[in-house]
Image (cartoon, rainbow, N blue to C red):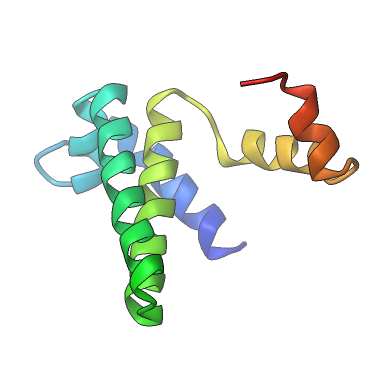
Length: 105
């Protein structure tokens, strides 16, 4: 099992954990809106590090982004497997075709 799958399973398990004993449980207890806010904060931090060009800081921030994405998904009962299934569907078409299928935004 990959580290990503292990992390996703751990996050789902924390949904029923005591918020006083787990940062993940504490985030999840605050609801999907707070989880989304934290994801957004971490994404911005990753963008800043990407612009700065500090590889080690970007790797660290990318790990934070992935963690908070998984927490946000778990807060809405969406599993990593569901996201992987969507990605698998998209591998059978070009990115340009997939983007066009979403409609003009």
